[in-house]
Length: 85
Image 1 (cartoon, one colour):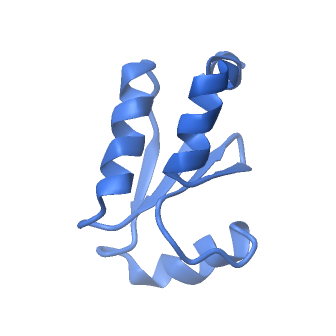
Image 2 (image 1 turned 90 degrees about the horizontal axis):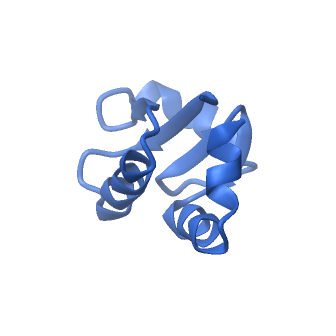
């Protein structure tokens, strides 16, 4: 399984949907909750190329983007390949 990291906030429906999608694929991830760890916000913004919204999802240190980007990969059948690597 690849290393998956998700930057989230406590009240974030898109974060919940992203985690549910990954869970449906049998994936596990490290969650960095910015509500609990606001000091990680600058880290996320730097890694995400200036994006400040959550979720920001990384697979093997590659920026996937937010929930819409993750869902698009799943719809195209490309997410399974990423998760199999």
